[in-house]
Length: 246
Image (cartoon, rainbow, N blue to C red):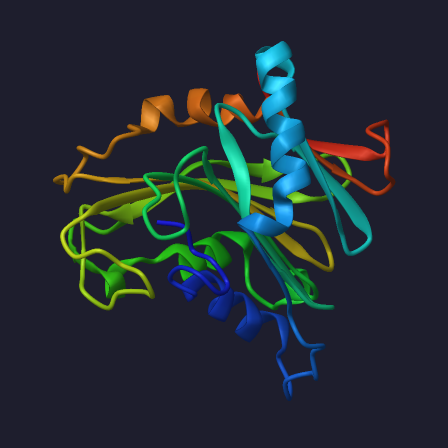
């Protein structure tokens, strides 16, 4: 279940915005939105690279306020949606041939300016963002798989979350009775928060029967290769590596 700003549950985004703005809400610039046709050039480049050298395809990078984030877009994932303004960013990727309506797997990257200053612990933040109870019929869960602090002080929290069976109206586009699971890597520095998610949607499942069991979460996240959170535009000593494949 991709907890997206505009296209899926909106739950994480709403929680982040509440945490990021402790006083009166700040004025935000209008959102700039792009959909799959706007990424035709990027998609063509991904497919060409995948055809010639699938093991090296494809690196995604984006400026996130004062940092640059990089990770590997694996399998046949391609950009399908983006929305951003001066305080928020979300990008969503689906496998080739799927859409924002019929996706079975999704990668979501989102970032929120100012959320890192919220007066709550990162563990509490994770629970507020990814509690899926309101959108579930049965078997909602949110479990921390790994957490800690990187050398530069950036905190990370990797969790497994979702619903064994989604409820009608649980979020925009929810499909009743479908099982949804998402793995979420939350990165928090002293100012901002970024979240990288991998989601699967398919048949309903019971407690502890989710598609990606806890023992497989790190292996699944290793498909992103390394996830670099950099203060400059080059991956160097000025980066935190939130996850690195063995």
